[in-house]
Length: 164
Image (cartoon, rainbow, N blue to C red):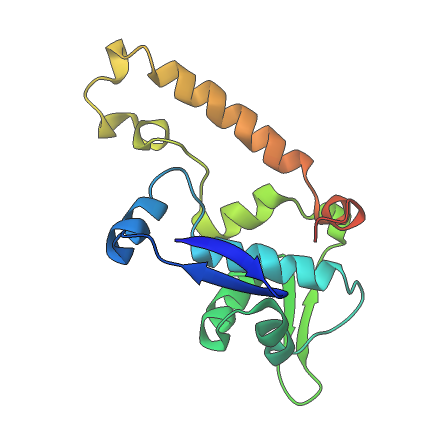
């Protein structure tokens, strides 16, 4: 599939590739889950409206997150201490911390529970090669660097960089 612009409209054309095969290839690699992506979008939305209580319907519509899925995500982010949820007519969702005090690491761990590139990094018993695997220590180093990089990126910084 490729895209072309004609008369100001984006048009996509199909090349003789099967969609199913493309979708399968698209999900390979190191990726965060859709749930975590939506959680990051939610925090970005609220960080851009500091000291503001948003309605779940507004977040759902503006960030293109299915509302039923968003409700589950909001509960997880509240449990992690990142959001305040107030029920009722005058209720809504707001940040529990300032945007500069919330990092990408915080959101990813709230949703994924851990950051790891390989199962042996989480549980040494998951792999029988840990004691003599030359790659095992590399996974630990890469994981530590990744964690530090995620901790260095806060939502205030994302907003001021114009990324959000």
